[in-house]
Length: 286
Image (cartoon, rainbow, N blue to C red; front, side, top):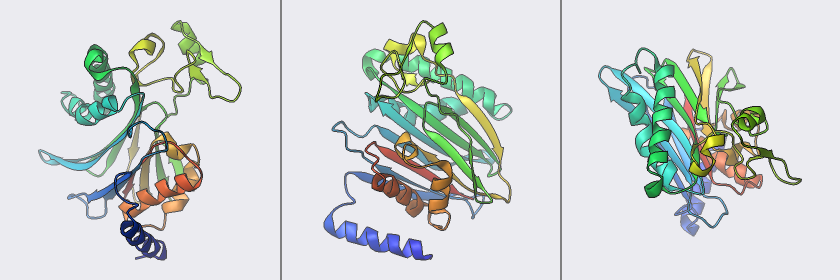
C-alpha cells in the first residue's frame, strides 16, 4: 500500500466516525475475471445544489457467452434525475441487443444511442422534462475499448503517464453553425457560458424535448486498443473537469493503486478546488 493510500484509509475512518461518508457519497469497486490486473472503482459526490443527485454511474464486468465486457458509464442529468436513471437501466442493454454489436460495435453504439433518445422523447410524459449527458466505455475482452459520448462528461486514458482525451466536449460555441442551421441560437451573455437557445450549456444530450429541434444526440465514438503502455482510464462528469485538466487528473491518481480510493480522491480534489456541481468518477486501472 502506498503512502497516499494509507492516508486515504485513515481519512475514511475519521469520516466514518463523524458521519461524513453517508448519504452524500457512494463508492464501489470490482475487477475483471479475464485479467487479474484490470480493476475498477467509482465514487459519486453530491454537489451543493438543493435538488436530488443527478449523476448516475455504471461500473461492472459482465460475462456474455465466451466474452467478457467491462461496462462503464457516467450519466449527468440536468433538470432531471429520472432520465439519467433511465439511461443507467437501459442504454447498455440497447447497445448489446444490437445484432451487429460484435462485428461493428461503433455502428451498434450509434444506433442504440439514437433508439434510446427516441424512446426517452416518446416517453416524455412519464420521464418528464430535462435530459442527460452520457459517456460510455465498453471494454471488450480486456483488449478493445470503445468510447462514446454526448455532452461534456469526459473519458481520459493514460499511456506512459500522458493523458489522452477519448471523448469530445460538445460545447454550444463549437457547434454554433449546426445549431443555427437547425433554427436555434447560441447565447453568450457576460458572466455566463454559451447556451443553446439561452438554456442548455451542452450542444448534445439525451432528452430535452423542448430543445430537441436544435440539439443532437449523435455520439462521438472512439476506439482505443489496450496495450502494455495503457495504465488507467478516467470517466467523470463535468463537476470534475471544470476544475481539473486531463493531465492533472491522471497525475493525481497515478500512485493510488486502489481504484475506489483513486476515484474518491479525484472527487475530493474537485471539491477542494471549489467545484459545487455533482461529481461522479469511474477509474479503471489496467
